[in-house]
Amino acid sequence: MVHHNPDLSASEIAHIWESYMADTMNICIMNHFLTNVEDEEIKVIIQHTKALSEGNLNSLAAIFEKEGIPLPQGFTEHDLNANAPRLFSDVMYLRYLKYMGKTGADMNSMAFGTSFREDIRAFYMSAFKESANLYDKVIRLMESKGLLTRTPFIAYPEKAEFIQDDEGFLGGYLTLQKRPLLAMEVTHLANNIDANSIGKKLMDGFAQVCESKEVRDHLQNGSELAYEIIKTLEEKLKENETDPPVSSDVVITDSTVAPFSDKLIVWLTSSLTALSITKVGQAISASPRSDLIAEYTQLTAQILKYSSAGAKISIKNNWLEKPPQTLDRKKLMEE
Image (cartoon, rainbow, N blue to C red; front, side, top):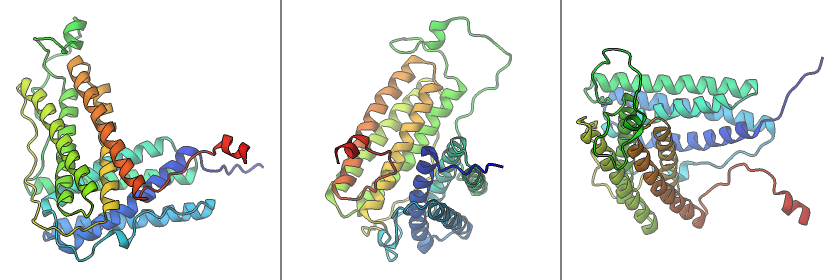
């Protein structure tokens, strides 16, 4: 009998590397949250989240060791200021955990769908369930505290119908009479508003405490871009006489002491920016109305430009750890 034990594929290597980086960063963030969280119920979820990342790191390290792949450096205690006072309120911690659970489920699902070896599939199946469970825990707690922000409500359909007019259904750009938004279009508008609201609060807080002026300017530019995205998408809902989602109050304290290194702050901001690009792409694919596609396309160009600026800062400061890549065949031939 032939035993087939394949090496990791490119997608599997990419996913375990990204997961390792994300979990090292998450442990730093959760450690800061735990030093000053006041609400005991929120504290329990933060402790649970940290434990999940620690468990993931152990599993991932074992895979790296088994394959003989060097561990990424990731983020360590040097990227955390254990004595920093709180920068955000407990409500922000909960909103961040909600976003983390939701995006974690999305990313782990995608990783599972492009993993083929049994041990990697098992890891991402477990990671997906853990992320989905975290999201559920946070939603339940937010609901019990009156902090849950839902997507807008719409009237239930009364009957099954078919589209008769392609221009009326697909049109919207340079059109005075636009059809009402689809439920899925409302969903993506609301989700992108919520994601950028969280991103803006994070960047506002980090701009207040980061050490580098270059990083501060970058964060302020990101906050302005997030504000522009929020207002643009809220306007689309208001034109449709649909109320935009109203987020829970988040307090940024007057602290000027950074809880994290500028390296971690830029990496987190870049990760949120990459997720924003993904979410806008999903919105384009699910929004037939041409004016929405035009708005999303324009915003994508701005987000990509901002993403590039963040990468340049990381490279300039030697903060950007190189992800796994294919061999440079031409360079090898020249040696």
